[in-house]
Image (cartoon, rainbow, N blue to C red; front, top):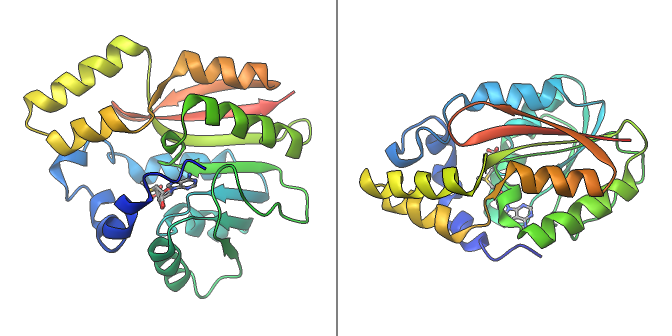
Length: 214
Ligand SMILES: C[S@@+](CC[C@H](N)C(=O)[O-])C[C@H]1O[C@@H](n2cnc3c(N)ncnc32)[C@H](O)[C@@H]1O
């Protein structure tokens, strides 16, 4: 579920690490402070981590370097292959799965993480995901997701207009097509599923959401 944008990653996988370094002018701001964002997610994580949308394994590598146990989930085969090649010296699994359909690890997870991926789910699917994760986590367990999100609908609309004015038409189409949401919507979803939640901004687009199970 929420896999309708996978074709994008079939083509993008081999160039993805160049994009995160800011080499695509349209996405330069989206990926500004990329390392800081990933480091913040690592710093907010516990020891046993389930990661969705592993991509080329950049967050995974940082988690493993801090001696965390990582169970990866990634629906794109080319992305999985690049991540497994990059991380061949580490012990981890990367399953074919997605935010809603995945193999639950046999051991208790304390943190569920993801970067730059939750917007592939509609708001209804995001609610379903939180429902599942709430059932998996114990009290104090966390969901730590970094992604593009907006303070309100007006900021979202103005960001699309601004992208069009700059001639960033790929970015504008992406913003109009995928399921970017607002902080009030995410706050409501998190609270309804039994989490307190805090948001920290890292650039114009990306915030880190830290939700803690009560
Ligand atoms: C922009 S990349 C982010 C990769 C990596 N997390 C990072 O921060 O660099 C988005 C990733 O989410 C994956 N993805 C797409 N739909 C997904 C879904 N429904 N569930 C989980 N991952 C998904 C894509 O295949 C891709 O690897």
